[in-house]
Image (cartoon, rainbow over all chains, first blue to last red; front, top):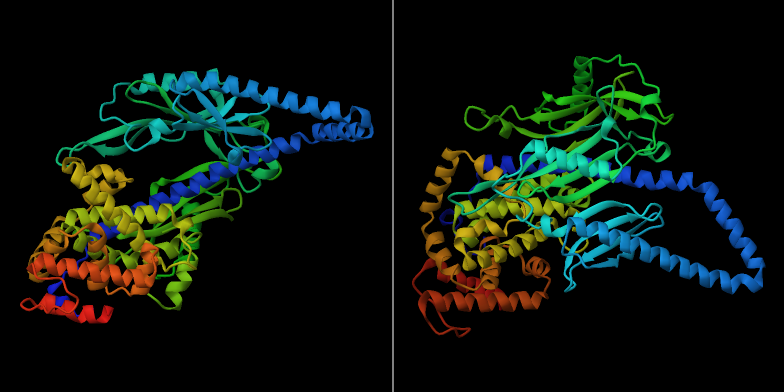
Length: 367
Length: 217
């Protein structure tokens, strides 16, 4: 150190905090992986729709070619085309504005965001009368329906949450389900993936902080009681259905939503026969983890609550049962009598074990 | 600063290899925590700021560009902004000090996981550092921009080139800011004239500063 006597200066480390932060980063990592999967599904639906539009695109192309030859009509066609486009966009905008106002009453202006728009959907920034940014929506160009809404007024820091949960879980569930039904989602084949009441923050003075909650309903398609994931070939097969609805625990208002329906005929799809047991899946995942651990002293551990039998969609539009196994790496040097047991874990990953043949179908490592 | 081929290799992969991020986290945790400690003088706040910095670094790891700065410099850049936010918030309303956090829930979880004995031991260690306590109290009276640069150079032993990359300024500007910070510190400590060649006597830490001052010149 530059002229400073280190012995008189602190060089402190609090390992329990260090490990806790690392563990929380682990959690962020696995959430990021899940979000990536949702994003993949979103991408897949666009690709899928695009594929299904191929015949339509062919017809449009023929019309355009014919129009080019009809020189006299060319000007008229292009001008009216622009007019129709503009009109369609205005209609889309007006419909979306009316819909958005039901959720965020302050919205007055919808400003198209070209950066987030594409051939299939148009994104709009939501602004109040003074032009302040309030959120964003994407609207399907085909149906005019909003398929994603982000409410920035609710999202920013603590506004979306409240220390006082005034709406009970039954009421919040009814609000979320009715909302999805209004949007045309048939919830018959969907199930909740996680507990909806989520603690989002601690608010208030540091000496008397209060937990702040939000309701987050995450639905996913289920077949035979198993959740369905997109699998490795989702761009070919199309996405699986997932929906999200946020409900304010304070007043029951919708704070955001995301709807991604699927075109897959889940009930009629062929299912692979599960042959690998839970114990065998754990053994396979642990074996795989061992081969990947750089620090050979660490012990792979699987918690019972973190293994799930699910389906993934195969490339032939069939359902492949697989075990989603989370493996944590435990450091045997950590004395669990001194620190919380959780502090002894660092690193690990998720392994997808094919429940038909025991092969590793994929996975993701985290810290 | 942490250098070496392994470190640089890990830096290249933090966006897609979470394990690489984890290794860099372990390497940098202690020094970042102590940097926060020098700046705040308070163990609890330093812990929260350290956690917040790493959560932010992880969330925005895509924005890290190894061609522009090392991972450690980038981390200190985030940390410096967090310190400014912390003091701004503290000035506004010390009762709502948590309000500046972007990850309040996670920061709190990490806080709750702290081993009490370890925390007490850290407090004892801190109490033993007389010079730190004397000098850090004075350093904390300085404007934040001086405080950050003094801590980085004086305590963390970070080169002017690195400091320049952390604050996105020229190397010469980093040197002159550091020199001004030293003068300000000297003035605050002893109330002496702040001439470039003035001599400071008395405290060992101040004589250390003379060495540093020459280094700047």
